[in-house]
Image 1 (cartoon, one colour):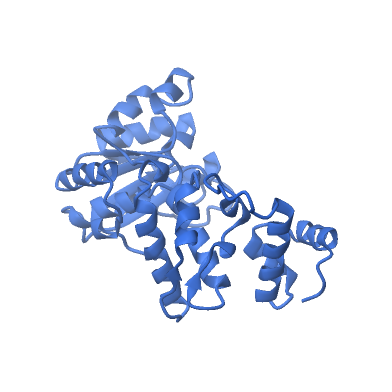
Image 2: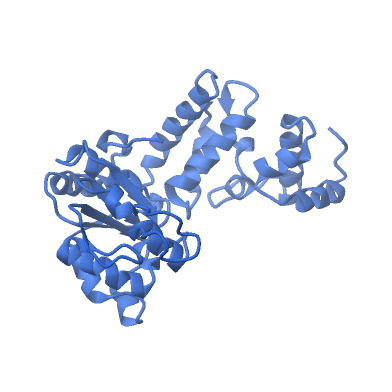
Length: 313
């Protein structure tokens, strides 16, 4: 599992540096932190960085994504349970609150937590105590809480989806992380970093990014932020046949994105056909692997192959 620090945060843009500066100040305290930002902006990286320079750095850092688990499972994961408290509870189980005791609990996508569990979490924040599922004796913990959300929690509160008292408890310090489109000059730095990282993982020489490749990245809106850029770079490194990363290795939406002012550019169908041919060639005709690299379904790939009359590779 990757371990992040403030040195892991790449970029020189003013909004990013402001967020890092505030996070460094907060890290020296034990205050609760709420990280705000779109999906893929690096909220867990910031959470880990805060933990790893604080006084709790030698204690556990435990993360849970509140959006991926149903209410009952999330409750038992967080709070643990006593044997016999429900069908299948054969033995006592510690929850993540106990696992994080002495350290930091990172609650990702806190805006997705069911209201009933929000009330239980609020009690932990207020009293440092909680009850395991099926238990009658409270368990005490000493935890630093860091939460993250891509939602506007005050608005969620007005809509009845989030407890305002919990928001105020979590938002002692709020740190807003900028979207990648708000820091366009950092795209080059991040792309170079990820290119080097994936080449190293694949035991390849460092690949040079052509100017056209970089230009395409600069003009893309990056709705998935850093996570999307990371995936794009991994894919490009996998597909690269030589020591350069060229624009034709990019997904189609980036190849034809805004900023391509070339009136002689191929039409979309031509670009798509050539792109599929290249990926199939790389995959040695393995359509399952090619579909994965193209990020489309296998059925869709077969339809495209038939539509464009692409022969067997």
